[in-house]
Length: 185
Length: 178
Image (cartoon, rainbow over all chains, first blue to last red):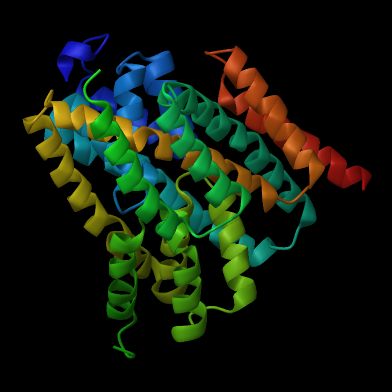
């Protein structure tokens, strides 16, 4: 994957600290958006195309999307060690933090001001997801078939709130069939 | 199994790891059912508190499983629950990443990636919509999200921290005025 990377791959230490940083600071969710901003936008370790392909694979596999994405990016940048460090980095700090918050909340829970602050952070963090979704949508809707699949996914899961699993079970084969029939571009 | 909470955590959450296609939120109702109705690890109200915490805390929402593990059996419980929910799917993804590298550049690979891309994009947008729909704060949450999206799209290097802080301040102020 080196041929598409804009810059030389990071050292394992840099890679680990980058993921650790994202894990520690990604309040309010939207981690994929954080990763995109950090690795494509700010550090230039990956091309946008590689990142979005990894994102699509991470979504299609079982497991937490951002954990899958961390493994995918870590492996792409620095092989097996990179994958292990990426997933450890992105999870280690949040695991400790959520237990600390749980502990504090157990004592001082119900404070409405704390609740309001957390809700505000979550709302702002949606912006990260929407920004990434917008970029992914623009890139993925190059032809009519893909655009139709995109709209169908959003309409069923987002607007109609149908359960994701059956929707994905129908749309993935359809979309793959369309992609294979389109042929190589 | 009943007298060993660690084992119970492991056999409850490990299968869910492999069932969570499309992201951690897809198994949320299963997590709820297992920990509230089946094992009685926590009450419904406690589960909702945990969910709120996992949404606002850094890291993926699925860390609610870690929190539940901690509440059931302390740090060991947190460790076992985390391993159970994250390791099985991670091994699978790692295997796929290896295969992907071996056949890098094969035409079918690009087609699969292009076939999955619109679904991934649709799911991200749908997920954002669902977070907003369930968000506290009503129209204020939508407004904050809209402003935050607009600023992020326009300014590549803008720190998301600034926006999260802004969201916190706006909501805290609204809470004081209410």
